[in-house]
Image (cartoon, rainbow, N blue to C red; front, side):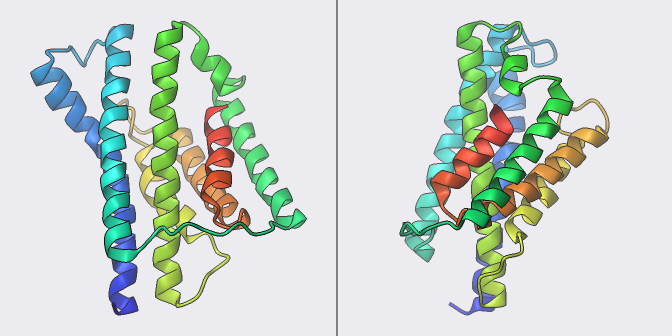
Length: 222
C-alpha cells in the first residue's frame, strides 16, 4: 500500500479509537435512557456504577474489533522485541510521570485514587476504576496509531510525539466540554498537556506497550 494512503489509514484508526469516547453518548441516551429507563439527569450512585459497567463492556468489544481489524489488514501493532531503554530515557519518562502527578494533585488536592475513594462503596470504586483502566487503553492506542501514522507519512521513525499531539487534539480538547457543564478551561488544558506527556513517555519507553500503559495509568489513575 502506498505510504500516502497508508498513513491516512493509521490516522483514521486513531480517530476511530477516539470515537470510542463518543459511544458514551450512545450508552447514555439509548441504552440507559430508552432501554433501561434510567434517569441520566439524576443518577444514583448505583446507576452510575451500572453506567461504568456498560461502558467497560462496550469499550472492550470496540477495542477488540479495532485491534483485530488492524492486525488483519495492516499487521499492526506487532509484538515488539524487548530492547534496552537507556537511563536517560527512563529519567525523561519518569519526569513526565511526575509532571502528570503534579497536575492530578492540582485537580484533586491529593492522590486521585484517594479522592475517588471518597463517598464510594468498594463495588462502586472497582467499577469506576475498571472504567478508567479501559479508558487508559484507548488513550494509549490513540497515541500508538497517531504516532504510526506520522512515522509512515515521514517514512521514518520520529522522536517528536505526534501520537501525543493527536491525542491532545481529540481526547484532550474533548475535555474542555466533556462534563456538559460549560467550558472547563483547566480540565481541557491539563488533559491536552497529559496527552503530550503520554506521547513522550511512549517514545522514551521505546514504544513498549506494557511500560507505556503502566506509566500512563499511574499518571492518570494513581
